[in-house]
Length: 280
Length: 318
Image 1 (cartoon, chains in turn yellow, green):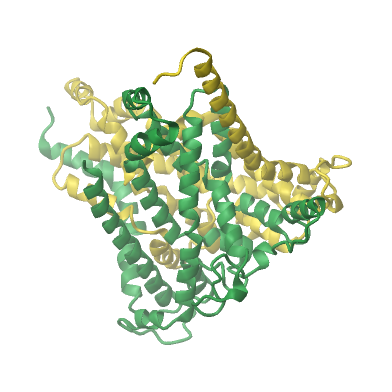
Image 2: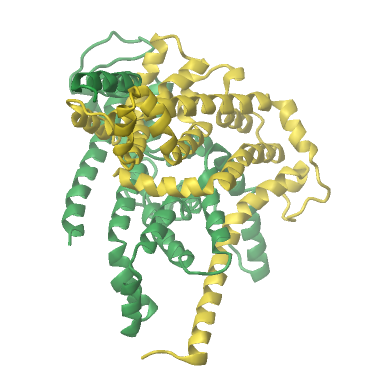
């Protein structure tokens, strides 16, 4: 039986209305914690605990006070600096390895690649402890290098970019090789530009992962001036206790770069997640 | 054309930086960790170094905390099916051609994208039993409806919906209620429901051939029937992937929440295996014992992955 005319129209309208209603309820549930955070960050402390949603007077100076109480700018810089270095290095080393796996023929290639794949399953905690003792031995505790170097290599990044590079037609490198291009020239001038979408995706996720990285800086960093945002936030919350309004201001500032990144790069993020699905 | 040998040298040169890092920071540490798990290595050198063979593993079996924290980890993983079901529901809603749907999609992804220490500190404030807005709202609601409720103390409470006891693995009525673990589950669902799983489902739904849905509609199938007989079976590979990944994630999860929000408490009820390993390795410096623990975790993940793959391959290859 087919619904026709008015009934069909009404059925569709009714279903759409119900969908909007449910989506809106869920959207509000998603938004309320964020909204509370932003509002709390502009309130005087006494009002944070009151039930009235809006501050009686807005206090943007809460944000300034965060910078006065803790070296927040320094944390910001550390997080961005480390995440940027890790992202650049990881993209480069992953792309080079991916090129060797996807575009060059050599013995044992597939064996080595399978070894890489196998390690994707290993939980981080297994390698974290030996890596920590390695950092102790290399005197890299409490240093930028200790935060950057171990994160500069990624089996997952290699895997992701290899999948991308496999989709590039092999005739392109062959043509370049005929023209006398060296492998490096083929890699840099032909393959890298064509892998741009994959590189951007990897860059976003690497940056994201390292900007929010918690475990490694937590165990590695002892000095205050080397703390990253998550670690700085943790100590701010622990030591300065109940200054909820200032802590929320710091949280807002922590999240803002992420929101900007998300709005700018949404297309790549969605694609990256769907590509990551090939992983398993 | 270049020769085979030249190509091999080029490949080695390209691979070298990554492979070096791979050996030093992944492959090497895995082997090292396995070796260390058979020793009593302590970073503070309070006891002489010794090979204890399977000693750590035997100790683990008799470590009551290990079993308690294993149960905690399992309890927190009860949120996974809820979260996956929520993601599927949301994906179905968002797969409709509605005006403004992209804005909704973006919004729902926001908690996942921003998740981390800041979001956990936010939720810690939300859950504060005395000053937090959640209990304030509950109190207001109770006043308005003129009912008397005892609001949960959230992160400070050892209560849980199964009635798990505190210092022993057993059930007791006195622990029944809503507590810290439930609070973490609720937060986890809030963070994850519109995240990667939802996007994977969305992609899966868009890959369902429209003819299938149209044919079902022509046969007069209702929404539920279409979901049951078209959408759900078509999404089986996606669901399978999501379940496996969530399971693996859940087994090694809970560290950040515990460190930021509860310090594993109250009374160790939010300590997961991952957080236990952290405290053993980085607070008590028992590297050998912590490594053994991490290998137990790894073995479980390995077995689960293997079983899931077997089952998945059998059921999905129709």
